[in-house]
Image (cartoon, rainbow, N blue to C red; front, side, top):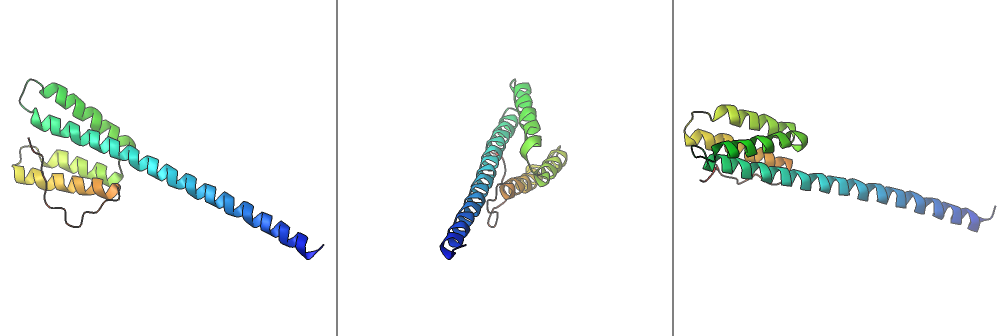
Length: 132
């Protein structure tokens, strides 16, 4: 076999391998980005429902707000990381009957775990709370 033929076959083989690896990596990154976008949508819906629940607590709209919160919370079961679900459970159990300062501490832990799940920074995140 001539050297030119061997080089051509090797070049074709390398090109095929490189294109397969490139397609795999592009597909993997696309799936990761789609998953992250889906998580963002679910987290935004959850925080919107939680805010509505806090805002409407003690009003006629309380049951509707509670229903929206429950639905948004249940949707998180599909996409949220286990750390977010643990922090959500701690938040729900820890804030009942507690003053606003305790609520804000648990809420900040929840927000930090959500931000970590979305690969966002938490370095300088202060104590945060819901505003009515």
